[in-house]
Image (cartoon, rainbow, N blue to C red):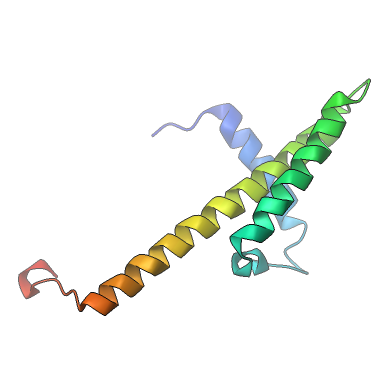
Length: 104
């Protein structure tokens, strides 16, 4: 799959924002519940809209606010996926599901 140049450039912005907190927060966001991210999405959206609605939006600040919003969206989707995988795993354990030996 070819990833568009614009997506790669924006992903770099997202990573720059995320890495600013590596020393103090690391991957602690992975322990947050979905409700935490839902609230943060509203907050970050408001911050981006304020920037975009400014009489003369500052390009760098707009990009950073967009990256913040995208990072929170990514974290929320990661949480949903992680919870889904956990539920599947628990259901498989409860059902004693095992692959036949010839399928391992």
